[in-house]
Length: 625
Image 1 (tube, helix red, strand yellow):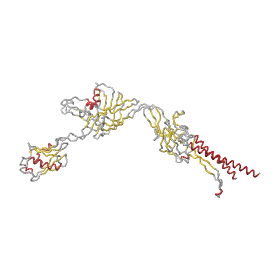
Image 2 (cartoon, one colour):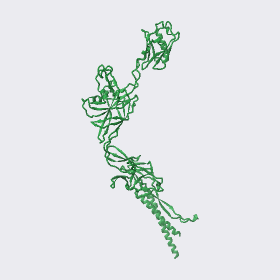
Image 3 (tube, helix red, strand yellow):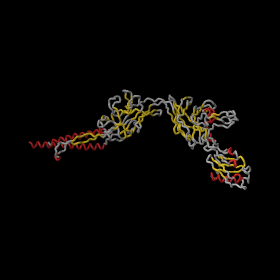
Image 4 (tube, one colour):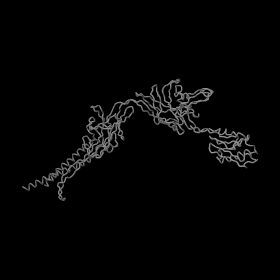
């Protein structure tokens, strides 16, 4: 019985090693198969008897089974085909064995050698790998009622043109623009400001006409170009895809000084003289107050014996000065007496100040009408200090008649600002005396009904939001492109070259585009269509599926798998892809050859056991004879 059992075990061993050889052979055969996962062999012993005596338990037979290596990745290798894909890490591509047969369940694979395949049955182009499986994706623009998940199709029809509806413009304007005129007149103050004002008595200049009409005509072009800077260009399209280049240009029209011109002083001058020398004792026990720049009043007061018969008018001014220096600091407010008239006055330091005097005894020092002259030399700071104003224009005609006074060569883009006192867009009117603008007797007078400039504060920040400006009937070279929306964001910071710097100048239209191919984003797995007009349309997203029990997936032909109860249902994960790449087989040839040698030796040893058992059986039979 023992010899027969040994022979049976050896036969089982031959079968097990043959099974292992079969796996090794398959692994070696698929060592170059994209995404192939090798099959390892596991051996399990079989107990021959169930004797309770451990010392009598003999080695039994062996059973061989395959062990999956689905979860072991292969190396990622580059490819020249854009649609070849490799999964980095965990997960599988979801594929269909037949994109036209919905009854066939989904399958899963790591073989990402997908290429465009035209199916003559329905005229669609799919992404199919070398094993005939079509890649399934999620449609990012599904039709109403359409299941977004399905086989990825490639639509190679041309893309229709789209008319431009919006221009996005982000830029910085220089605080000091360098124009042709300012370059030639560097010593002229304000040479880089294109001022729509003009001196009384002179004819209305070109700049005024521009601000009034919102257009630059032929005979104004040279002057306009000399006083403006380029703002860049952008190409817009109509509904048929006809392009037109829109040229932009900026002119600076106003700059409010950050600081007002300082006054020589603010003064309060008395309306009558102080008492004569020797008669100033009348000022004893008197008080008055002084207020500087609207602040709290400071009191100047004198005791009963402050002045005597020897006191002079200059002594009074000195006594007042002493108290003012204590109240405000030395030199802030100065008391003076005119040596000829004997009139007392107070004077502030130079600058934008106001002075006022009051109190019960103020008339004893300054007279009854002094308040009328308080602060007469003051220039108060402007609420718009540091503000600047610019005008934006676009070109209508590439060529023009320099003598034309009607047709617009450049048209102004109105800002729709809420600022009411800008210079650009003001309209000159007859003054109070009925004098017409530009006449010798006319006093410059304007209305500010429709300011159209772009305004910036002293820090260079745009004053008004201009994210939805309507450019009505944008016309270039005689073609009307309708109304476009200008989304603009600008700053006004110093630029050493004095130029406008466009950080973004784009629009949303395009011409007709021929299909050029597809591209796949590594991070998002999004499949995009690329067109000759430069447009890219995101169409599909490639899902990556994972399984809790991936090792228990059922293998199918072509490196595909189907789910089982043990594997669980697929779970969509946020995996990453490598496009223009393939995952190689995880077979290690050197390791397979090592296993092959071991398997061969084991097979030979099992065959030797059979030979030995046969010899032993012959010997037993000889004994019987």
